[in-house]
Image 1: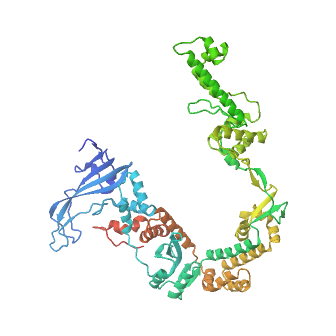
Image 2 (image 1 turned 90 degrees about the horizontal axis):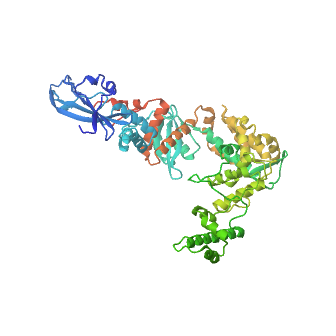
Image 3 (image 1 turned 120 degrees about the horizontal axis):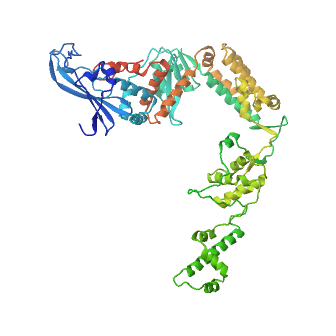
Length: 622
């Protein structure tokens, strides 16, 4: 044992794993490796074991040496835990047995496994909801040493067999990369778990799959013609159920075009009257959400630099680039140079007479004494702008806040709104000028002339979007839009634009038929609307009339298909789009089995975990 290893007591987890107290076992030892932060447990098989060959049942009488193996357990407090097992290898007494030697299995640890059964079950369950790489990286943070390939192999051991006796399915298309790679997904209509993930969406793969499942009686699908043709070709007696959601969505597209053609994109209402033309916009202050203004917290304490020194800033409306400020800066610079030269001439080794310096620099005796008595800090301050006392104005208590907000890169329009929100009662023009002056003189850059306003319609004008009108026409529960502008002016909108009422009647009639229980009423709808503005939609209904009638009379819909697609998207995104078709299907299948049938991850791989000997290649199917 190295210096980095120290003896620790055995943890009680061994009682659970082996069914007896290992503290009393003289062959049990443990140590903690500080370098790798890992706990190592040692287990030696007891001598009182009576071996029976697991292959033929014959009791062995002779040993054939020892076998050593290491298995990883659940981490404890973030430390990796390894169990080192030393067990005897026995000779089988049966000369006709297929195995000459054998070892007895340790409960909870199968042969050729590097992890305990319970750890494998946990990793398997997590691998369904994580990508292999992400789970491997996450496991390391908890002290579990497992590679991406090991996690990948857990799911690859589960073999998914076909179900030829299935009688009702749902079909739809999903994408791996939008606009590039598409798959056809098939779900069980009873428990909604995934059955197949086929390449493409042109119906060819679906045709071959349907040939192997002749017992299918019902298929829920969207309105894709490729799927309809494939189903009719292979299973002509099968009842195809069109998706009610897609039927309503198709009608919605036609109604949207009808409203778009005859109703302006934005309707303007002023004094309860719908205007014929768009009104002109006015320049109004930029509006901000009061909650945003309440979230800002700035006080009027003076701003300080990193050293805690008070910052002096310019809040005058004049710019530093103006000639007046440039002349003042040049005068300060000349005076600074004159004072430096005077002090340097006087404090040199020769120490000239003051009268000579007065004549040389053309200054009075009092001025010379003043220059010589100045400290170095006072000399350097000659270059700074002299802060004059400010006039008492309503904006003064807010100047420090303005500077600190600009320093934090807050937009000037938001600063203006915030100061007004804080209770400023002075002139807004004065406030605008001070914000602009502090910005330009202390932080550089120009502020546009219209920085604080934007064009808005007058506050007396209400605007209504045509999309909001369509939503109100088709919404099932209008109470949800009770307080919207559309609801307030809807009666006037229908009078101004008759097409809105026409769309409302079409939608209500079709929705009532589709959600009813009399499929023959769809024929009356087709006959009534075949010459109207939705005649193309009606032609589509006639081509798929059998599936639509089944959608009305059948209790099955494609809702479970859309739910399955959501699970597919979840798996696809957690795998970062790097999975192939087989891997993507395995994960989606496993997650749909667990979520839709109630089977636990431990049950899904139960026969694999509890099967003696090597890991089986053929896994159970649920």
